Image 1 (tube, rainbow, N blue to C red):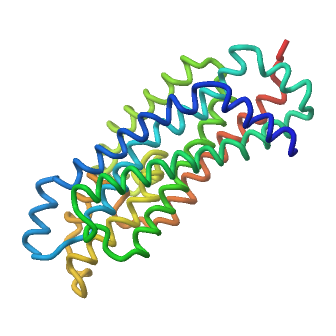
Image 2: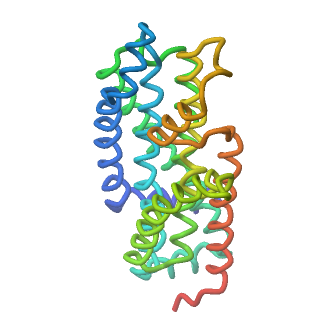
Length: 281
């Protein structure tokens, strides 16, 4: 397995896909987090409370959820491009069985997903620091929790991309599929949230993924505002913050992790099963 993992890292770093997708992550993370600290409605809450609030945690959550699209595209394009360029033939012939190849890819791309998450966390935190100051991060333990959740989210999105790339081996098609679904969920989620099936909204792939970070950051912010009166905060306040910064009201972060990890696992297993049967000649 070790040589296969080394080969995967070599293939990753000899192409431009990994840094091509990482550049927009760095730029968007910083500017989205910086701009998020100036959001009018949240600033009004801070002014009314009369003390600094952990706004930076919210903007780190928002930046993470904006940037995950580049992680999933990176994973999907890297795998599907190997099929498109016929490089996968040599990989499968020298790395038999194919399950070992998939395992090596998951290990290597999980590490690159963590790199994406780390770049996002650092740049988003810098943007929040510029906009909200050091007081905007609250308790250091909360920042570490939000940061760790962001790393996990990026890694799972990257692995989901690997699975999609194994299923859809045409690079343009996998890009279109990811972007179309992202748009579809943006339309579907508000509809579900206001229907009799509102409980299902948090279990859509994108909503579950955003909850990995948002369902930690938003409750921390609410506790900072309400203190001991957290139970008296209306649901509308939670819903507004979740809509803006990610997550779903009433859903714990660990449920979001399990839900999205399930989607990623289904994609990976589906890609593995198809790759076992796919003709590479």
